[in-house]
Image (tube, rainbow, N blue to C red; front, side, top):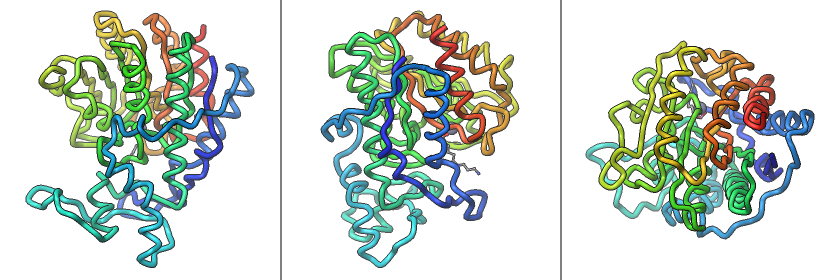
Length: 342
Ligand code: OKP
Ligand code: ZN
């Protein structure tokens, strides 16, 4: 299986994040990609290739042009008002406030285009996020070229980012961009299976009214875990997309044995849907050692996950999402890829 990766993705290197009411060391850091890349090489998963540079229009197929422009211009605007450190939003247009006004100030724009205060933005965030999306697009192109599998070593991750907002360490929805690219290049039914510990609210929302992109997600129950406001079992799609979203919220403390039945159910939906390609939003944060998560996967369980996904029997691209236990991250990620490859 080929791995797609670009060094440009390392340029987004936040020092701190707002978490638990404090500024803490950031967890979504370049070392995540570096350890995965090293393990891919050490365990000889396959060639590592650089992404192609895709035109912006592929990102704009799922993200609002004004949001994309905001990210592109962000650092210039932030520094123009005298700031030089990492940026965090602090005001949002919640219920009763207007989202449709013309805002000039960068603080107003930042709140308008974000969902949380936990996602630091820096000087190189845009170009790294762009490279991350290119990595997913290149993996999608590998499937279109006839490869049976591909690994997009994406970072920053994507599954919390929506049509016009960032959040949860995510800026562009890499899996969503790739899914739309597959649709635009001749495939009719795409399935996205999100196994990150956190619900992929951005991806779900992008395709909620569409039957052509099935969204399945297994994650920590949002009543107890980020992102809190989406990812419940009664969310099953709307309009033409009714029945094409499925969520399996699971309790904190879930181990592989308790997770596997939900995975079996998700695989049954895949069997019925018969996708022409599958995109796995591959978070590795169900791991017992993850510093911000509450599931209890062991490293070996990730082999089982990969094996089970292979049995679905569909061309599959893996798009890396979360996973913050750096020391085990390479092992856990490559376990999935090796389990899949057999
Ligand atoms: C991104 B991905 C912990 C704060 C965590 C956001 C988590 C984002 C996860 N005190 N805040 O889905 O792995
Ligand atoms: Zn996550």
